[in-house]
Amino acid sequence: MNKAYLNIIGLANRAGKCTFGEELIVKEIQSKKARIVLIASDIGDQTKKKLTDKCTYYHIPFFFIDDRDTLSQAVGKSGRVAVSIHEQGFAKKLIALLDENFRG
Image 1: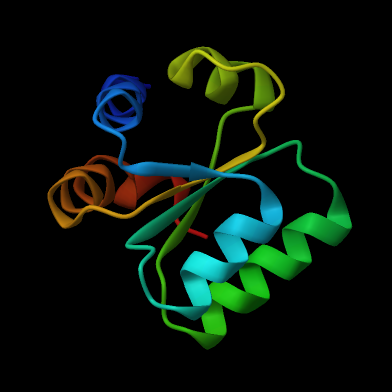
Image 2 (image 1 turned 180 degrees about the vertical axis):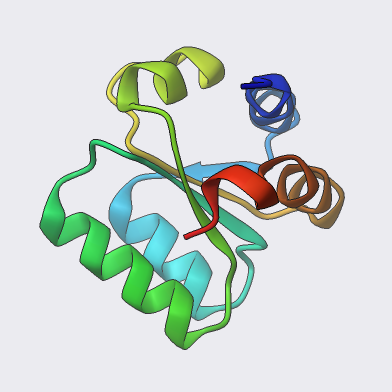
């Protein structure tokens, strides 16, 4: 599996175009600032349901990606289980890279 999307997540984070934390991500989804939401495959059931329900309702694309360790390593912060990208260019590239393998 090509892991190029992890580099894009890292670039988006360094560019300041990422949001972390369940409540902040939900606010971004509701305000339609989120362009894509990436969720670790080993996230808790309650958080998974909350994020996927919000994304579905507000028509925000979301993907289940590797595990929390891989996501955390990509952004250089520990304990990350979800990330919202709020810049269209990064989101388009991530959707193109992830579409065939991780669609939520």
